[in-house]
Amino acid sequence: MCTTLTSNQHINKPLSERKQMMKNSYMASIHSRVSKKEFEDEAVAAQKSSGRSCDRLRQELKRCIKESECVQKQRRSARDCIGATDGSVPHRCFVLLSNFSDCKRSLVDMRSRFRGRKGDM
Image (cartoon, rainbow, N blue to C red; front, side, top):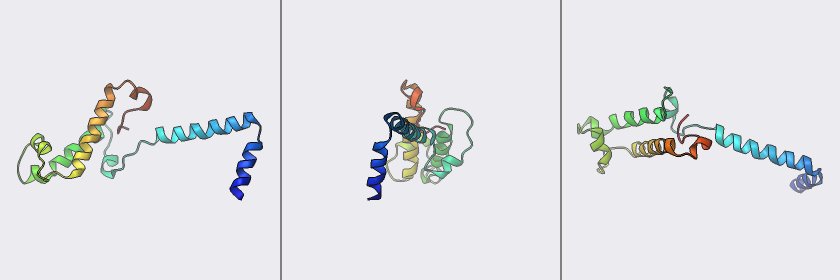
């Protein structure tokens, strides 16, 4: 019943005030989506930004592949390890590779000028 009162109170406000409230809530939701460029992976977020495009993802991808069993124990090149499907490279590395590819692809996408680069801070 309390929510009904609030919605009725919202309807009873003047049109200009309701428009302003809607605009403020819409802008707040856009701002929260756009300005929140955080990485879910703490290791990527901990990387220091060098100012290069997609650099944090690139550094973390390199580190992930270097520390994989494929490179450490089998002494294969990083390129061979990425192409390997034998399970010697963690799934996390493939997720980082996908995110890095999306970030690089967004550099040439003209729509990303407005949205910002994917995965880059």
